[in-house]
Amino acid sequence: MAEDEDIPLSGGIRQKLVDTKRAWARDGRLLTGTQGDPTRDRLPPGQTLVKDWPVLDLGVQPDVSPERWRLRVEGLVQAPVRLTLPEFMALPQTELVNDIHCVTQWSRYDNRWQGVRARDLIEMARPKEEARFVSFTSYDGYTTNVPLAEFTRDEVLLAHSWEGEPLTRQHGGPVRVVLPRLYFWKSPKWVTRIELLREDRPGFWEVRGYHNNGDPWAEERYG
Ligand SMILES: Nc1nc2c(c(=O)[nH]1)N[C@H]1C(S)=C(S)[C@@H](COP(=O)(O)O)O[C@H]1N2
Ligand SMILES: [Mo]
Image (cartoon, rainbow, N blue to C red; front, top):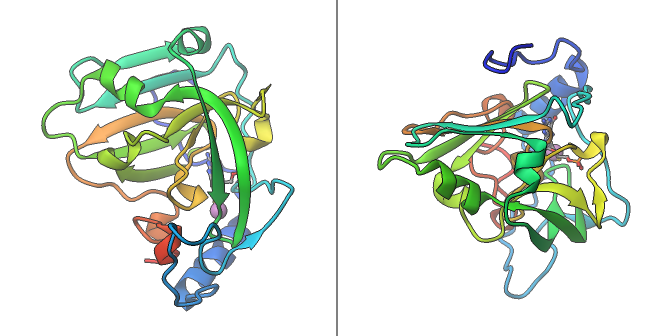
């Protein structure tokens, strides 16, 4: 596939799994109706702590070799960015520890990530005045969206490693986004394109009944 082509949703996605999650969203499953308080609690409402690290995807785990991987930051930017993996690895590196909260109710504490701060990458691209939202595209065709102000927060990372080891393919290697303040569907694996937009563009799950924002403390599971 040429780098500049749009990436179609992979033909191999497990439609039944997608339909089930969509039905849960429609029925408001998993909602406890409580507002959490992150200053008091560590576990958001309705979540269960796990020690292992579950793998969630659409049934496809694209095999993106380090040689083939590209990252583009484009759209409403003054200086579009296009990086190979060695170029990405040469950027200033950051290590962050945070908790993961998945909308399917598992949470995992103390994940140690290494990578590049989203803010540093966005600064390189010099966003235009009117840029307000970000749309991500991944090698499996998955998409998701967040406000630009959310993406450029301190704790947001483009991670290439987890606990000192390269991120595995199943968890989104070579590089994934880690956006710890929101449910984990907002953290795209195998990310390749970051597009800055004037208007919001709901992604894969956002158009299938998931909440557009996804704050675990407010239980924004479904929209
Ligand atoms: N490219 C891509 N990113 C994705 C997904 C996906 O299907 N494709 N699933 C999302 C969902 S729903 C979750 S919960 C997390 C799971 O990440 P993990 O498999 O590393 O736990 O990835 C998110 N990012
Ligand atoms: Mo998820």
